[in-house]
Image 1 (spheres, one colour):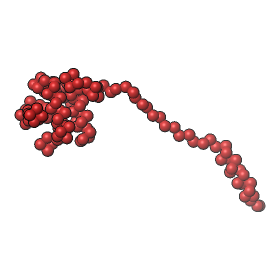
Image 2: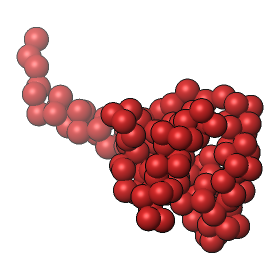
Image 3: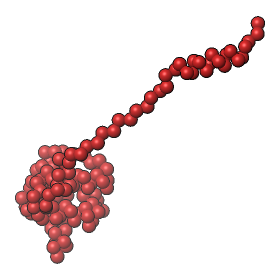
Image 4: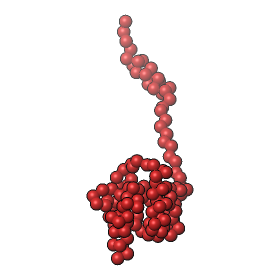
Amino acid sequence: MMIDFGELSAQRAQQKRQQTPAVVTQQVAVSTTTSAEASYLLKQADQWTWEDLRNYIVTEYQKRFGAMIRNPAKEAGILKAFIGRHGIADAVLTAKAAFEIYEGTWRSAPIGIERFTKNNDPYFAEVILARVKG
């Protein structure tokens, strides 16, 4: 028995032509809406809410240090009280200075929401406000 290699090559070429080529597709989603979590970017400081302040702090923290442990009820209580003690304008001024001037670090530690508590005011918020307003 003899093998006809020419015929084998022709059969393989025909099989390749009959095969359906693989198609690769990529799905890309584009959003043109503004995220509610970044709405503070469109507001003046005196128009921010405690949620805007929280979103700013969390966003800036995560840019510098990565994910943070979150407790929504605790965050609300801390930031509402902070705004109550300092007013919204000074609360925003403190947060922005903490991240834009001090790079999110105060006394060699990352600035998280806990830094905005009443017990930290004499060592954190009051010092920053005095320096910025100075």
